[in-house]
Image (cartoon, rainbow, N blue to C red; front, side, top):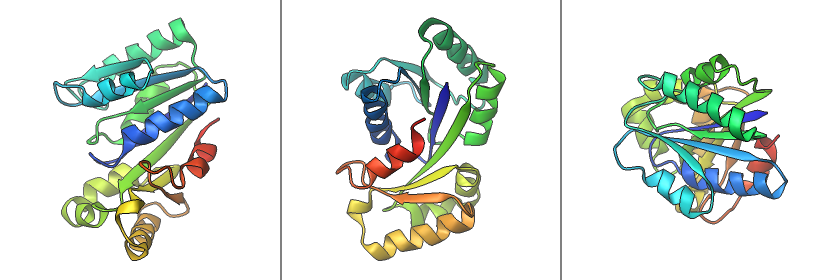
Amino acid sequence: MFVTLLGGFLGSGKTTILVKLAKAANNSGLRVAIIVNEAGEVGIDGERISVEGYEVVEIAQGCICCSLAGTLRDTLIDINREFEPDLFILEPTGLALPDQVDEIIRLSRIGPDDVVKVGVVDAYRFGLLLKKKRSFIEKQLSSSDVLIINKCDLVDDSVIQEARVNLSQISPGTEIFATSALTGEGLDDVIKGILP
């Protein structure tokens, strides 16, 4: 059993990537379980994914790496026991730190063979976010196994190249993909790199 953890700041396009990843996994015969963490009271992402035809467990009104750690652990154990998925896809709130979520996953003792931490950034806003929240963004992305520069359809090549340079400094040696989840550009390579 594998876990894909989609981290990244609010609005980076994690949910769109999640839906396409889930479809690809499902098409290749994998049983997929999706867990979405919404910090607010209204679960927009969970509703959107459910409309796409996937059952979603939504953990709301808190952060799964902080106040809801026990809830996440229990949810993982329950889903694993009842559904026995081949792949869990987790999308924590955009304010979560993937390392903390990874630790909770491992403490759940559901026995993941592998946890792949995917960091997603919005090409259009990434430079501004680095200026305003550099310390947090670095903590959020530094341990990523895969990095995605998303929304590349909104910017020119120089902005993408600048994002690559910054990400290479934040997480040296990590593979970086440039994509547009909206148009699908570059997503096939990402999906091949993430799916078990």
